[in-house]
Length: 318
Image 1: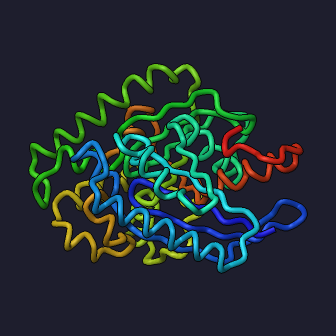
Image 2 (image 1 turned 90 degrees about the horizontal axis):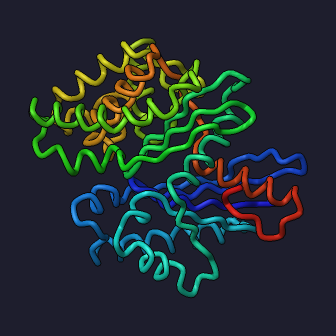
């Protein structure tokens, strides 16, 4: 079976097509990505203005056409924080769906967190000890604490890297006052989550998301000059603090030239580093592990689980 997953995210729209074998294993056969930056747009306007909406529709339909060219038997499409938070998100989804025969699921923050956690558990060794999982997106941050048996605490905060950058950073590089505002917003947003889930006492932190992987590549480059393999790479709190300071001191144009940083994420990379470092600080951890799987793999795993259970129309969320 060939399955296509369309992830309509806050920073970018992704297409992944995989071949699934009889055992449920899968191999990627196609991948495409388009950076749209809807998270920052929604943070500034509260909605998605017509020019951005038109581009989103064109991009979705282009990716869908590519999925069909590959011969995908199943197409799964989901939208995350930017479209979820936009005042006209529902109307945009209806316009994207029109005439395609594809239904786009607008995932809630908790649904998104659970899907990501399922992918993390499948790609990183997680046992009976609680693990803290962080999914840093453009429009939201998903936080899960759980074990291999499933999540025990799930939360989503409007703390995406692009959202914070659009709301609080207006200079390049950010001013000292802007950096302080970002740090304070993150600290005060994290505190209730730490209090609510502190009794679970996670012993390891795992992080995923595009900006997370960029930061991990940069950390790896600083240590070994090798950025080929990120899966299960450990990044220390000290690494993150050094990278955070470096990125805030550089203009975006110079950040974009650093090894590991994708140019389209150069603006948000310092904020992403602040989010990860603050999370580790407040949870009392000295580092985190990078997960190579995230939302797209979580959507696929849930679909396959639904098929195995005999559900002809499995939900994206258990």
